[in-house]
Image (cartoon, rainbow, N blue to C red; front, side, top):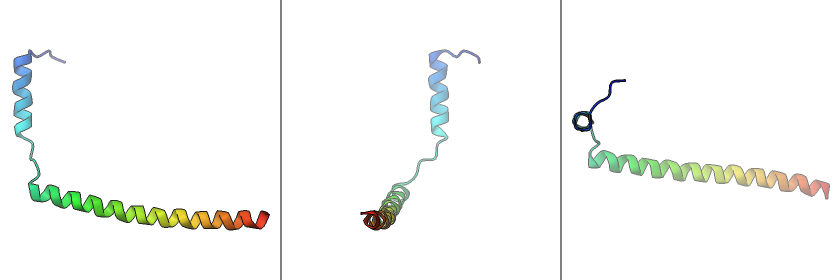
Length: 65
């Protein structure tokens, strides 16, 4: 790999940074809301699955004792 002096490196970083397409505020809000909704849905789902398994284990343990 070729060595580049610090000044050239900074110029390259700025050139690459200018190529980045940043999301708009609306896109960022929409994505954040969707992440929160999906997180809540998954939390409810896993709570239900965990509760079901807990009930099954308790009933099986109740048969032993």
